[in-house]
Image 1 (tube, one colour):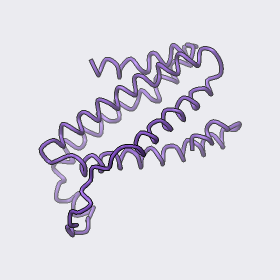
Image 2: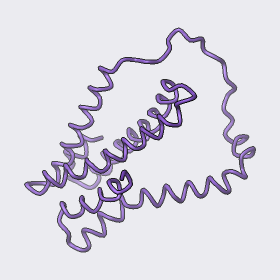
Image 3: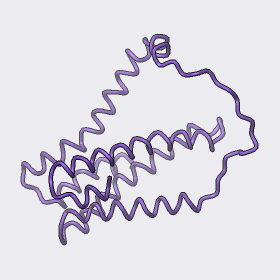
Image 4: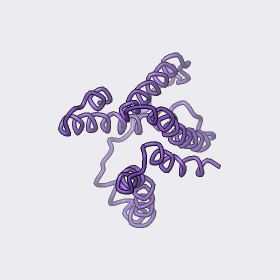
Length: 174
């Protein structure tokens, strides 16, 4: 997906690259939390997920700063190269990290998930906290769409847009 975005010369090819990239990102978003729940003990799981969220927000602040530093000297396509290099470093780190899962543990059979029954059983939670969480997620992710479009409308430079983009993540960390 990332390579497709980098090489794209048409909107259709860029759209395909974005689709592939989003597919990979959604898998990563799910697998990272599953992996944390596997390697963190139940007593530290909440702290581990919270720490992981903070590290992610730190990356969301640092990444755009890197783009701002390098995109001002050339093409905005350098952002794909920076993304690729960061992903490569992350992959190498994961490959060299020690596996802390308990391979000797016995597997416990669990009931098959029943999505409709789960939604029915927890409909009150989904109607209250679920909606609030969804709206908060929409609000948080809207900056990914709104800020670049608004910045382009105002004719801001790539550096100015990326600085406006990363500022909320940096403030959120402090």
